[in-house]
Length: 305
Image (tube, rainbow, N blue to C red):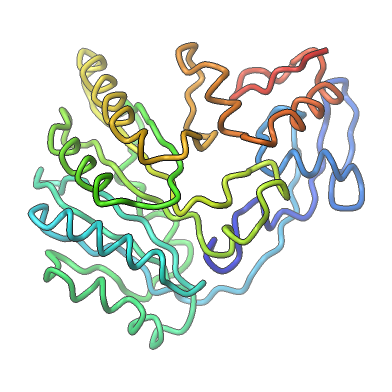
């Protein structure tokens, strides 16, 4: 939906919130507007939200699903994805990934969602569905709620996970080559790497209009290490960190805050970078609404008072 309607935080209208001292208040564009600004991207740093009011949009059947390509054409598929993602109408949003099939075969995938007439969507998505040719094409008219489950099988409870991510304004040939080379050495067949597009409408919001500031990013780049055996923690975590280090020159250097871990090695500097120019303004809100840092078991914005 972000291509046509922006991010979830862009469609938030109002919240009811309980602050650290037990005060119950409402925050929206008219009441407690500065707090409302901070809640749109600032996480659970300022209180406990007990209700959200959102702007809703009518959505019919979507033309959505993945198209899979041979790994031998992974570089070409990701280059196609880059060119497609930078020239699409608002009705489309995209994800591209390198992953393994259930049989363990490496694949490139482009996942699309077209929010408009199926007839027009067929024309818009045709370049992705004719390239290759694809190993498999699962794009079809799909109910909105089913679209929300497309990635569920990749993230099953009880597996072990370690994520790294960053934002990127463009996808260079060098970045593609690095990602393909590094993915080929993944120690677990369950791991994947991806580009997740921010969305046209999300890009049109100013960097300081909400606490989420990365409005100039084309997409989030991510590396998801996924494995089963606890004895293999070290090798999989190391792989994810090495991939992230290799990809760093192609990124903005700023994380998506939800993908910053809570363990001590993640560090407060990454959190500051994730909020960019909005960080000091968020600290001022923290000083006002949670000066004792009661809400600290999160990607924490530390108070200074």
